[in-house]
Image (cartoon, rainbow over all chains, first blue to last red; front, side, top):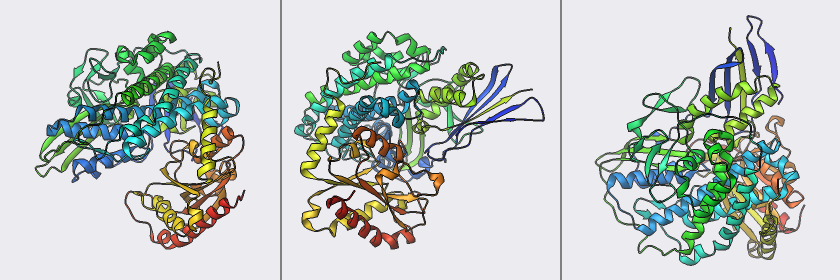
Length: 441
Length: 187
């Protein structure tokens, strides 16, 4: 829908509005207050209904919680399951079989594959190639879209093999899995994974050849960092300015705040700073732990520094992680030896259970307080989008002056492109932004 | 920019192989969408088993049922070349309990503002775009229909609203009839 311009008679205030589009799942709005071409305030509002999962899980057992929190997101249910199950196992002192740990990495690979392929090909690439949607792009770039769907399908099949189904899998349990796959089940996925490796290599080359808008800043980056692995569920919470925490201690350094104009809680460091999570942060902080194929592909792009400083290049970081995930999945399948038992026994009881894992879009922290019956008494779930929201607003304020002089529709498109670079949950919507610009007195 | 596909098996080729496999086994695919834990959004999960149970045995053997929750373009791209799909979902935009049948070729053009039925499960990408993507990759819209039922409660919880629950037999009968039409080669 085209934007409209409505001069405000009261002062020199200018207001631009676009009507809401209803064909979206999430809705967002961006309010910019500008003076003399400088952005004084940028506020990204998210109007999705508040979600009451932190209350829904109260009174539930840990295994029930794992299935309930998967429902928070259809794109990254495994991230929610992984943060929950690691929190419970950490708090209750449950040690899982190393083969179970490897299978959980494989499950996480599946989620990263389908989520990253979706975002790179169907949500973000159309912005770079000048199309309003993946559908429009498919008319001119049929093979590109088919490639994205083929890679995504491989991720879905991995998740279904391990989790029983590709959406909202049901096999993750405290201590392991309700069922683990036979070796032959995973071997059947190998040809698709091998093909996905080649397609993902091509993906990195493809997106590295795109033209990204100019934009430079120095963000504070946060991700898990592990001494020998690219991070999924283990490691320490590390930042670009020296923070170093156990994954259970997220709330030693960060806190959530209510912010006017949004239903989401925003997270900040305890001294009020915003920070960036996700592929660009992970690649910048721990690229050396990428699978050798992915690291080599990253180095060939020559964009490592740009990934850190220009958020538009997160599409390359995401593609590199896509290659990492399919390559690691192939390696795990090759070396798979089923655990002796799907899960180890454990004893319910009271405990403080907290952990953070790396969802496709960044660090996802869960905390549960269990009462003496082993039921959840209190829960805290901090998704990556609410942690990234401050960084998004800060970046929008820095980037917006470059587009303020453009026609409203073009300015909106460019700001949407930047917001989509963070892969926030609202980015599923092809067009989601209600842009409002006010000129301050 | 270089188009992908050089040096690797082309993605379109992989989908074509999947279509050939589907043609040999299950010419008709029933795709069940929704969330059984979101009240009326789970109506497809109730009605499809009832519809399949009423099919003649030889017909049931030629049908593949996919309970996917969310529509994936691959589900439609991989349909057999001469096969069809019956996509079943709760919809909004029509009264609760009302059953609608919309050809997939038309789903891609439906807009909420038109007051037409819109599939409830528009997750990830809107259903019109997903069907359109499948059409772009196949070279033509996939053959088949969306069979939807209007819902009114989509909050958390199992169980259907009274209006939807009462209409399940009609919904199941419509689904069965559409499966039979697709098996007979209907457009």
